[in-house]
Structure formats: C-alpha cells, structure tokens
Length: 95
Image (tube, rainbow, N blue to C red):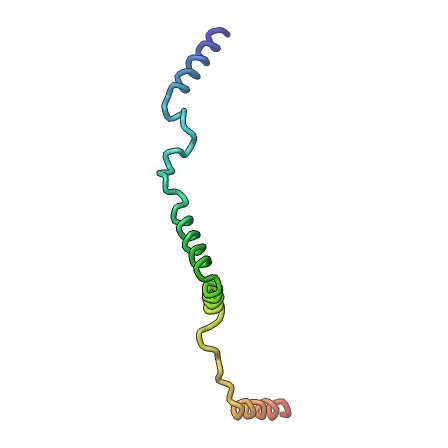
C-alpha cells in the first residue's frame, strides 16, 4: 500500500516537473495574431460609418439589393404573344 502511494507520488511529481504540462492546452497554437483580420475589418467598417454614415448605409443597402436581385429583370412580356397564347389555350380547352 505504501509502495503504491510512493510510486503514485513519484509519477505525479515527474509529470508536474515536465514543461509541456505547465502550460494551458493549445497555448502553442496562438501565435499572437488570432482575431486580427476580424478586428481590422470591424475597424474599417466603423471608420466608414463615422466618416459618412448616410453614404455607408446607402452603399450597404445597394450591395444587399444587388446580391439579392438579378442584374436585369425579365421584361419580355409581349401583349400580342400573351393574347395569342390565351386564344390557343381557350381553343384547346373547348375541344
């Protein structure tokens, strides 16, 4: 029983003396620039909002609209063609 306790204490002291176990997990993954691109984007947008908020808002709305709507709407509505198609459909339904 005492031998197990001493062996456990020795193993624990050896593990705590190791350098990698004294740092938080993932400490070597962050080289100091984490989040910097996001911060720069946010600062650029805030700067644009401060200098001219109305133009910034209008440009943002235009960009959202351009992304949501097609560039050219479909305006190929020919009244003669529509009337012909309706007449054809009416004639087909009578037969």
